[in-house]
Length: 432
Ligand code: GDP
Ligand code: IMO
Ligand code: MG
Image 1 (cartoon, rainbow, N blue to C red):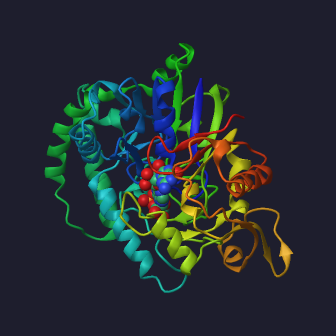
Image 2 (cartoon, rainbow, N blue to C red; image 1 turned 180 degrees about the horizontal axis):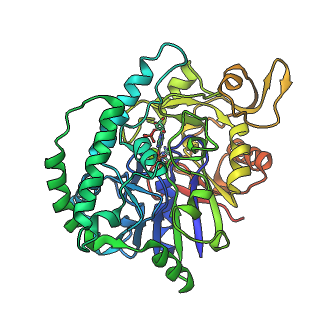
């Protein structure tokens, strides 16, 4: 059985927390896309764990964890994250962590060129802005993957005769092509190769054929939870292109990023923040560049986990969520951070976009259109009550329940969980 947790907006909806809540029922947690551009925060017994590349399932001692072929792995960060989790007291992580032999490697030169590309875009006078990437080398790594010049885990750990020499040759050639594109940048290729000679031995025990790993687990009826990273509106195809990440963050990425058949997937849990946030540049029609936006940012403590940047904030956008639901086919929803809305007297929700008075049928693909949309809001009454100590769904204030019902009715998807605070215990379950 494979169930999936996916972000429905622009990221940071609280996917990590839902994974942590559910993980006790699963044997395996797998990541299928992205890399350490993600930042999933879990708070257990007052201890805060930040996961970037590694699956949040590591918090549960009984759970195995996999980085699938769709993930991109920066090895120094992989080991640094592992060590920091161990330092926080997570035990036995190494024997429960597996990395796909087909995953692509992120090198420091990918990270350097990520920043060079951002600077280049920022200085462009005609059309624009930089993307506001995390600078983790994600875009450049998926670029070398797509242009068929990337290096994968198996290229590194292969110990057949000539494999290391081939790795070195391909690595040197890659750096050369990057320098042709971006001009010379400081990078000690020999020191890097020496570092990877050590890293490959450290990595070897983690490496598996993940297609076999996953499909064996499915045939043995293991319970598998896929931890989505980034989110639908950052998907390379469906997001606000080009202000997106470079991977398939939607449901399709689960199939291509793990090598499992679509029919293996059962439930798809959509994680929806009760309002909307976005980190980095790009269109955000329900953004509130005013006191409401600032209040959401402050009460919600909206700072990026990976880069520390302030998250942009705005009202819940049901146009986005309808589009997101169409693509991902959520079977139920987790509405998170409902407590952040406790003190708002009225809560506007975006329900339609129009351009020159003409209503749009769905979320537009075009940046010029997105810049021209008028957003129609429905204003729902707030509940003006602290819900952080509410223990059951039934005890929620009537207006909070009405807010959730409005979302359910609009999207045609039931709400199954409601987040009322950052801690593991602050999650209400609703029978569906
Ligand atoms: P992810 O990337 O989707 O896993 O989400 P992040 O961890 O980046 O951001 C979500 C933030 O909200 C984290 O700091 C969580 O601890 C916090 N959080 C999650 N659920 C709730 C909730 O229901 N209420 C509040 N107040 N905070 C929450
Ligand atoms: P989680 O899993 C929020 C955003 C970046 C930038 C754009 C491209 O925590 O929800 P990239 O470095 O991927 O090339 O940056 O995507 N971004 C995220 N924003 N949460 C994330 O992950 C994100 N992953 C990427 O801010 O705008
Ligand atoms: Mg995050």
